[in-house]
Amino acid sequence: MRRIILFLSLFCFFPLTVHAENSAYLTNLSIEGYNLSPEFNKYNNSYSVAIDEDTTSLDIKYTLEDETAEVEIIGNDLITESEQTVQINITNNTEKQTYTIYVNKNISQNVANINEESLKLEIPVKRNMKLITIGLVIVWIALAYIFKKIIFFR
Image 1 (cartoon, helix red, strand yellow):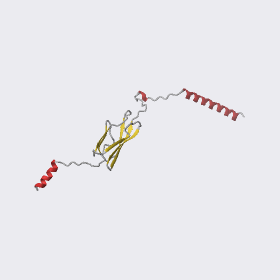
Image 2 (cartoon, helix red, strand yellow):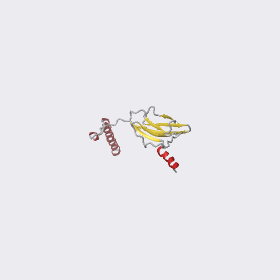
Image 3 (cartoon, rainbow, N blue to C red):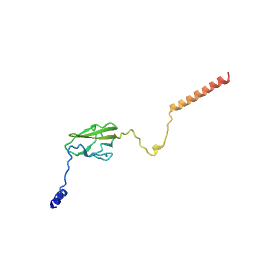
Image 4 (cartoon, rainbow, N blue to C red):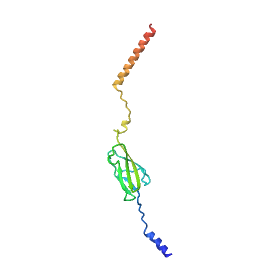
């Protein structure tokens, strides 16, 4: 009985450390200054992040489950498109995992400041539209006059 108690007490005071060998998983993934969506879970391989217009690459922070695994990051060199994909490939002997980050770049397109004064809607009528309208009215009057002369004065 003493041996069993001694044996169990060793496990309580000296916990076992389990090292994941040949694992191609990450235990942590984050991007400096931005939030991943959804929150990181090592079994989820697909994430998205919204970045600023002037950001050209992501500062990716990760922790490998097995420190002997190799990591390759593809697509993070120059982010220029409004939607781009960054892949994190982890290989460890026969195991392979790919984490994909869908990057959405917020690109401004001449956004105007909106305030109370700018909410007043003014539709400017161009001078050409006035001239076209006047010309059409004159043409219709002329056609009506000609049509009247042809029908009633024969």
